[in-house]
Structure formats: structure tokens, C-alpha cells
Length: 208
Image (cartoon, rainbow, N blue to C red):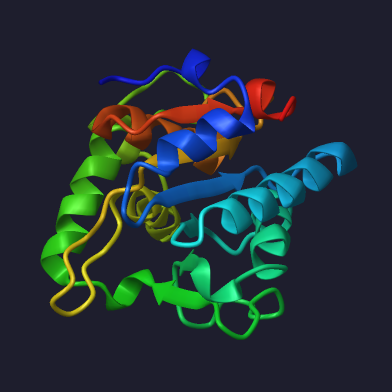
């Protein structure tokens, strides 16, 4: 059954959907620029989800703003169920707590990295919102690419040894609407759409 945003009117709808999976994965992320009200709501929702679903794994980044707000909610209940995807080893660790699983994308299997890069390239929207795909991707600076590929891994999951990657089942995102391409979170949204992962935006989950 295909799910639409309208199927997630309440947080109970989210819990019911994720509860059908033996080990559900949810991506919680968003813009660095957020309101105090949004930050409080993120923390509250993350706490409710992790409490209600004892096998839930949360995927996020480690950026200021939304990522940190979501993480506070997870860490208040079960920090070991938070997966943080970082582009490189020397990223700031001030917001990482004991128990968090930190995944440095440069350590990921090269073949899977190649797949994620291709997926990122094919779904990238330029900052001005005018170009899409390879023509837009080829214009961005090389150092920016790992940050966008990191957003892909949050959705696809990554292989760990003999463990196969597990795709995220649902994403709650806070997108900066002032950016024509939605920034990095907009990129995550497009990857979700490409892979058939339901996305719930702020206009819906702010009422949870």
C-alpha cells in the first residue's frame, strides 16, 4: 500500500505505520535555521516516537538547529538508537553523546558510495531551482558533494560488515522554504521521493 502525507494526520498514525516493521527506521532532520517553537516540537516528537517504539532507530546528521533538536529528544530516552551520519572524521563532537552510533561516510564501502553518489547526482536541484540532475550536480563545489551524499545515506542506510543496508521507512523533515532547492534537507526529501519513502513536512507534524 502506498502512503501519502494525508495518512499521517496524527503522531498515532506515525507510530502505527512504523510499528508494522520489526526494526523501523525514521529520518529526523531539517534546516539549521529554526524557531524555538519548532525546536521544542522536534524534541517532543522524537521522545514520543522512541518511547512508543522500543525498536525504532533514528537517523540524522549532526548539524546545528533541527538535527540537534531531534537528537535531544532521542538522547533523553535511548541515545544508542540514534545514528548520526557525518561527512568526515574531524567533525565537531560537542553534540554527540555516549551511545550514539556515529557513521563517517568516508568509511563506507566504495561500491555503495558510488551508488549513493549516482543517486545524489540524479536527484540534485540547483540552488536557484533551475537545473536538475547532472547539469546541476556538476556545478557544485567538490567539497560540498560529501554533505549531499551523506543525506542519501540517511535514506538508503549503509552496509555494516555482513549487515545489508536497511532503507529508512519514514522521514519527518523541516525544510527551509526560503531556499529554492530546500537546502540539504530538500535534497533528502527528493531522495525519499525517488525511493518511495513517505515524507512528513513541518506543516503536518507541527500539529502533533
